[in-house]
Image (cartoon, rainbow, N blue to C red; front, side, top):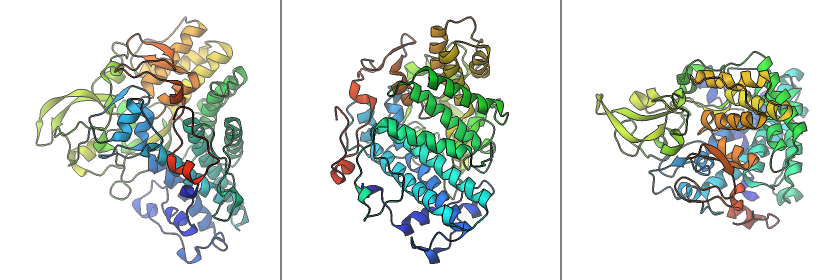
Amino acid sequence: MKNILKTTSQIFLCGALLLSASGCEKFLEEPDKSNFTMENYFTKPEHAESVVNSIYESLRATTGGGFNGAPWMMLEFSTGLANTELGQAQSSINVRNLVNNADNEYGNTWWVSSYRAIGNANLAIAKIPEISMDEAQKKKYLGEARFLRAFNYYNLVRIFGKVPLIDKPVDLTSPELYPDPATEEAVYGLIVADLIEAEASGLPMSDVSGRATLGAVKSLLASVYLTMAGHPLQKGAEYYQKAAEKAKEVIDSGKFKLFGSYDDLHSYATKNRDENIFMVQFVPNVLASNWQTSIIPYNQGISAYSDETGAIFANKEFVESYEPNDKRAKEKQFYYRTYTLSSDRSKTVDLGGYYIFKHFDTEAHLTTTSSGLNWPLIRYAEVLLTYAEAANEASGPTEAAYQAVNAIRSRAELQPLQGLTKDQFREAVWKERWHELSFENKTWFDMVRLRKAFNVKTKTFDNYVGHTFSYGPTLKERELLFPIPTAEIRNNNKLVQNKGY
């Protein structure tokens, strides 16, 4: 577990990055470095802000791109719905071909960055109460810290299963330095407790600054309850009802809405607004997002970027599984297969595949080569689909459940669902989740909680174990989790490698 620990000065150096949409100067505002010791750092309101900001900083670790791929791709290649032209990104290829192992750098990044965030959250939760400052603001910072700790544990428990549950500051002298893995039930218990406390912390329902909000807390809690209803905990109807109720609170708040155009999904003007409930924050030329070179075809000369890696794009069969006339599958909506040449913008070329347009920064590719697009973590579309699925499981296909899913379908220019049985409605909503939330690190999590995989040929759902990807590999039980990184097991012999790795 030593890999997850940072010295006090390293922790707070991360905290210099303020999440503000008001300008670059606040993004790089430095905290007071004169007090960088554990004993006397937590004395000022600015220190409370900096430690909370350091938790946000870790969110960026799993985004990115380049010639070695990026950790976010791990959760996409594991669905069997993604392809790559980047032969040197062995971590991507191993996951895609279902020959992954514990030395995968993507998994290591998920583990280390999540525990770094958790470590900073633990510091914030333990130390901020000691600071003399405005009590309402103190409560909000603690709410943000609890939300972010829950968010990171939610990723860890779904990706790795039984993981160490650390809820207080740890240093090299702590007896908890080498903790036992906790049960999944215990991890979910802390997640729910943190989110319930965060709900009562006075956070605003929405906030264009990019900080955590009550809307984000409730949306995440709805997702957590939905997962707890399914595998591995299988808590069933009670938790489907909880998920539906929490998602309905977000819907009824009136603070969020679907964008009218899919272009708004990758627009600077809509960062942290309307449909974008919670995002990873970036600013061009200061803290630029760096996945753009990964979502363009390999060396076809369409971008102002000098690197064109073709690291990830959609399988042809998946894009063709959308319903006829589904707007999301049309050119330059969710995907693109044509673009102009950087050497001559009057010439358009067929790229030969379906590349990801929902994360595409047009301005960066045409001129700036520095992208400030945010990475979406929670969208209102997901909340609507969570509500529709959970409400159906709890009470059958109610009118409100139809309204939620049909809002998604209406934007896609599809006919509304109607007259379905509970079973038919269930699979219809699953399809909408696969098609609407594609390439946003949602689909594999859905596959595992449902123990289902979408068959792009039959357009129905197979059992997860035994499902064969369109290009050959077959999912085994071991792929329900990722392997715990080798370095972590080497440092902590109490950890037990997941079955099959």
